[in-house]
Image 1 (cartoon, rainbow, N blue to C red):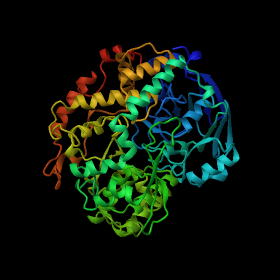
Image 2 (cartoon, one colour):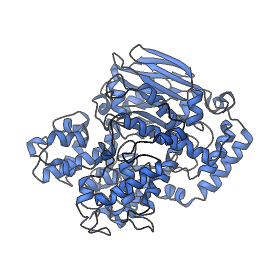
Image 3 (cartoon, rainbow, N blue to C red):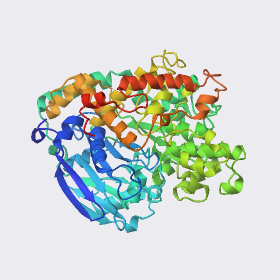
Image 4 (tube, rainbow, N blue to C red):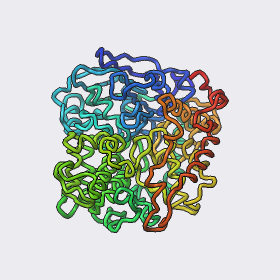
Amino acid sequence: MALESSSYAGKILRVNLTEGKCVSEPINSTWLRQFVGGKGLAARYLYDLVPKGVDPLSPQNVLILMTGPLTGTIASTMSRVAVVTKSPLSNTFLDSYAGGYFPAELKFAGFDGIIVLGKAPNDVYLWIKDGEPELKDANHLRGVDTHAATAQILAETDRSARVGAIGPGGENLVRYAGVAFDLYHFAGRGGAGAVMGSKNLKAICVRGTKGSNAVLINNEKSFQSLVREVIDKDIHKNPFVQWAVTTGTPGTMDASHQAGIMPTRNFQTGVFEKAHEIDSKAFKDKILVKHHSTCYSCAIGCRNETEVREGKHKGIKGEGPEYETLTNAGSNCGIGDLGAISAFSLRCGQLGIDTMSAGVVIAFAMELFERGILRREEVNDLDLRFGNEEAYLKMPNIIAYRKGIGDTLAEGIQRASAKIGRGSEKYTLHVKGLEYPGYDPRGSVAMGLAFATSDRGACHKRAWPVAVEAFGQLDPFTPKDKARLVVDGQILTTMEYSLVACEFMGVQLPTIARLLEAAIGFKGSTKDLEMIARRTWNLTRLFNVREGFKREDDSVPKRITEENLPDGKPKGHRLPNEDFQLMLDDYYRLWGWDKNGIPTRDTLRELDLSGL
């Protein structure tokens, strides 16, 4: 891969906030060949820069933003950025992603990525224009929400620029605070926003006036032809992609409820009596305005522009809510009103906190309140019952500003339970501290394995076997042969995240290889791409092993292993620990790890990771 004749910018911006210095440096070409970009390349930098045991909210932690080789090109679904750090929520490796125009603009501005070190003595934001970085005062933006901060920064810099900003949640170190890019594209999971807040970095603003002319292509003619082919075959004629355009992720509500795995009242059941009020039909009838594209050079246009058209929340506008918010912050909290969920989602975005984790910790607190474990005076004098919209809508502010019970819940469900005690641990839904996504593994056992083995804690974005189990034809209750589903999913998504590509991209590894050959001169096969993905997944595993994570941390919550689902298709089912351990053994074997989940020497040697 010759950088001078490819779509890479070839430069990384290293920002030392403690010293107030910004230095441009060549991208590490050896690591680039090993990891391609995005997740893999950022993980390699992180492994090198963050020593074992670093407090994620200390100046010693590092925040990395990384694009991919096809970012800023005409290739569809490639305008995404990987936000990588050590998670303050789970203490694991963390990668979180956002789309929009910011990723392409960063490439246009002359950089493949940004590495942020140290801590500024006062609030600042980073302003980059055409390769020239500057740290600007942001004291006047302290306490300002993501929407207002973005507007103010654009007024101070360039209205054509793109901004990634944190809100009060990040400033107050809520451990699941995220970063809002272009207002509604949210790198939400795991607490990257809290890491920015710990560094007194309010925002990053980028502008590249050359636009796509700043991005070179190895073989322009071949690349254009292949992009057109991908749009025609893999996007316009792909049923999954067309589902994303016509229905979007709210359509998953229908399948999830029918399968009986929709998180309801803190995962006490998978069936919600008000599901029809927040399903895809209700979404279209009550709040959907139109589908459109809000990512650079995207042929899909999956974003849902919404406006609440009736009820007491009439007039609430935004993008979404998506499936995970509709479940984790909807049915899981006993909320069956799209207006209320939309208001909750918008407020979380403005405050800069993850709707998924927020929904789960609130549902946890609701169950403790209903069981008498938390008293009214301990929850800010709120009637914190499931379904109480008034209390529910106050919680984002209470958490973001760490008021009363919000100070405890801002720490995430694992730390909150440890502080509350009184047997509350049995009601926590998380892996390694990251709150559960919107699928109940008692009706999709492979999904339980996917959550347990994700490198950033409970995550549905590393593998999605629920599609062929609960939503498909495979038996969703047997553990036999399920590890392969998870491993294959993790290999594919890891490659996507190293590009960095959208999950809706709809193309497979052979097409990716052809795109990379045309764009950067990549001379490799599908097996070479799989090797890159396997190398990356093993590297993040090594990071977590170095941090002290063991087999017992690849786990399933007690509610999932010990309690049967009471309703729906999976009624009477749970995920027994013995079944889970069988799947975990198979999973480790397929990855070439020992019985404790540590990559073997032979595996590391094969992947050229022996020196780590």
